[in-house]
Length: 174
Picture 1 (cartoon, one colour):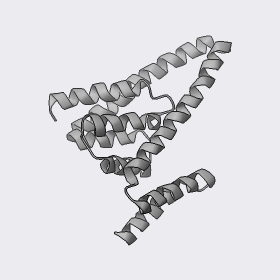
Picture 2 (cartoon, one colour; picture 1 turned 180 degrees about the vertical axis):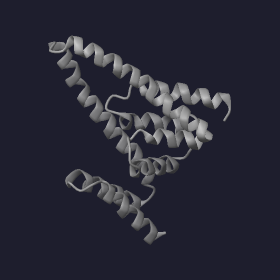
Picture 3 (cartoon, one colour; picture 1 turned 90 degrees about the vertical axis):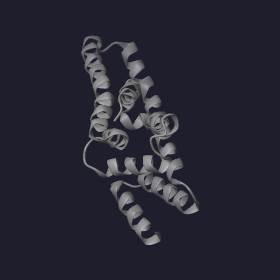
Picture 4 (spheres, one colour; picture 1 turned 90 degrees about the horizontal axis):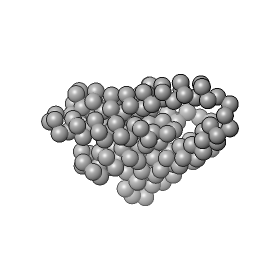
C-alpha cells in the first residue's frame, strides 16, 4: 500500500466518520462515493458484495469499512480504514456524552436531538438506494431487491433470511 493510498484512506474515512449521524450505515452513500466514484478502488458490484458480507458477519455494521480497506491495501489498509472511521467519531461521541451530561434537561438540546432523527433516517434510506443501484443490473436482481426490501420492512423475520434466500437464488440461477 502506497503512502498516498494510506492518506486517502485516513482523510476519506476520517471525514466520513465525523458526519456519521445514525451510525456507519447512514454514511454508506458517501463511502460508496469515496471508494467507487472518487478513487475507483472497486466497482458497484464489489461494493455491494463487501457490504453483504459484512452484514452476514457478527459484529457491528461498520465492519464493512475494514473490508473496503482490505480490498484497497491489505491488512494495513484494513487497519487504517477501521481506525480512520472509528477513532474520530469515538472521540466526538465521548466529548458529546460529557457535554450532554452537563446540559441534561435543556429544551434546546432535546430539539437538536429530535432534529437529528430525520437526518439519520434520510441517510439510511440513501444507503439503501445506493446498494439497490449496485445490485439491480437487470429485471431479476431488481425484483429480488424489491422483494427483499418488502420482506425486511413488513415482517419480523431476521434479515439474514434475505441473505440465505439470495444466496440460494444466486446458486440456482448462475
